[in-house]
Image 1 (cartoon, helix red, strand yellow):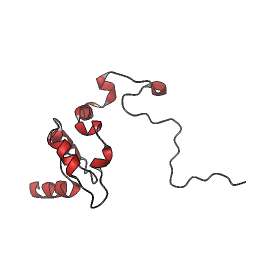
Image 2 (cartoon, rainbow, N blue to C red):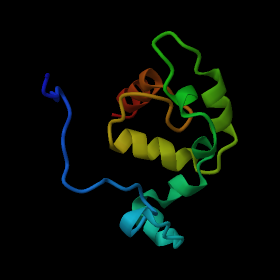
Image 3 (tube, rainbow, N blue to C red):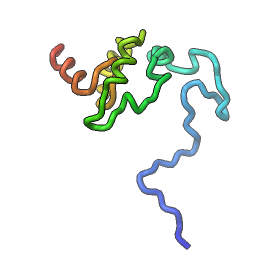
Image 4 (cartoon, rainbow, N blue to C red):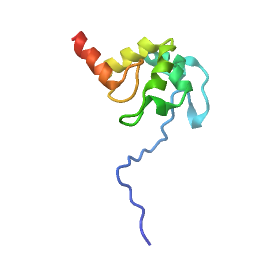
Length: 109
């Protein structure tokens, strides 16, 4: 009989719950509990209501759909500022790809 092995996984003693979930996975509906104050803009982000794969396309994949969503998003600038401040290297943030964010950062330096 083979013993189970774990390669590349981290085992935690307590389950990790997303923002907004209290003890035992119960939903905490207070807005302040869902996101820390500096991330509350994410509650209003249109990308949270769409397919996340559009925002993280495979290399060479189209970013058109994600950028279209970003163009009409009220928190686009908050998202872009977050991505620039946290050096997000993957995905579409604030309507810009990683390459576009890198160029913007370089131009503003």
